Amino acid sequence: MKKKEGKTYFICDECGYESQKWFAKCPECNVIGSAVEYTADSLYENGKTLSDFHEVSIENLNSVAQNVTRIDVGMNELESILNGGLVKGGIYLVSGEPGIGKSTLVTQIFRNTVFPSIYISGEESKDQVFLRFKRLGISGENISIIFDTHVESILKAIESKKLSPQLIVVDSIQTMKTDSFDSIAGSMIQVRECARILTEFGKKHGITVLLIGHVNKEGNIAGPKVLEHIVDCVLQFELEVTTATRCLRVTKNRFGPTDEIAIFEMTQTGLIPIENIGNFFISDYSNQSGNTLSILQQGSKLIPIEVQALVSKPVYGQPRRITSGVALDRVLMITAVLSKKLKLPLESKDIFVNTSGGFRAFDNSTDLAIAVSLLSSLFDIKPAQSTVAIGEIGLDGVVRPVGLNEKRAEFAVKLGIESILVPQKCASKNKKIQIIRDVRDILMMFNQEETK
Image 1 (cartoon, rainbow, N blue to C red):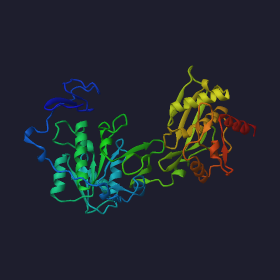
Image 2: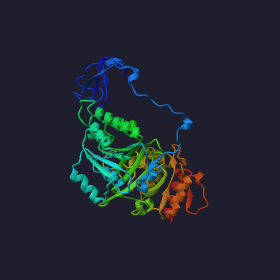
Image 3: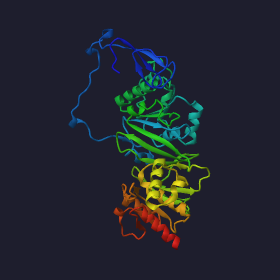
Image 4: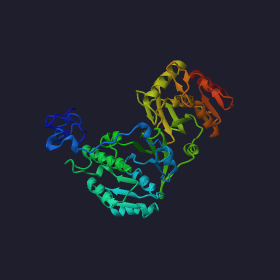
């Protein structure tokens, strides 16, 4: 909203809604009593002119250094997904649910750092912070710790004591407060303003700033999502319930590719990266009816998952469709295609589809694996061999290729999978690879298994 000069306006302290009139309840988020009054001053009020402001440097494109300076944090998995490490002067946000390991992760960054660093704790006591550093075996004269929540006072102390840090960690941004606004710490205005002040400080002095952010009950970054637009890189921490592993996902990165992930396992000594992802997620795979493997692409990584399906007679009058880890719309579409093209009574059955392996498979590359699992459970026929299915199913029943088909198939061969089902365009001389052109080929495959 364009603010008039010298005009009083009101901002919702929860969602940032702006209005020139006072409101008892925010029309956007329906929070009562969240209106905060501000005045939009004109440029020349209080006797200020353009000459009173600082000068801005203008640089030519050819004169700007092209090499980006990165900070080595001593964690290979983290450096890999960040395209080489933390960028000097970059602003990073680590978000996730409470207790998932955000503080543990950023603390481990200090383990191999030899440059001056500062850890700012706004929500934990001294004993809690020192015990975590001790438990992780981290110590060093180059690490300074500040226990405060006032942003201006913290930055003043850093400058006055000439600490000259290369890395500043703020745990967490929701506990920080600035005197620029009267709202409470953790409100949308305070979070946005504190992040802006820290961003300007980091950019000005070439300091890498790492912010820890909370998530709300919907799973989004609290603030609500204003921090994602301020920072340079967003690292989302997710808990994979089935395997109790932690997935660190890059959802935004101005210095490299997005959608990269790193898998960690939480132990007493901290987060340990899982290097052999393939064997880790299919170690419990059993070749039973309704079970089929598929290969997911997560950034530059290929991850095997197990798709499980159960088709049974309905207990109640209306057949149920329940999914976990896969999109319900995809399952409904695949079920309709199989019922129409193969003349099978799937529409009258209870259908349950689940992914085992710790990942949510919401892309179309698992369509073929879902179809194979559904037919395997319907006929109660288990595949004779361990099977990987990769492909997208269209409404016409044709199986279409997905990205990196050949690489996924090659990855399945390396895992020791005995049967690999792929679309026609993924033809290969490998005897383990079987071509599936449409859903009728799946039915023929199970008819052959039943004959055997």
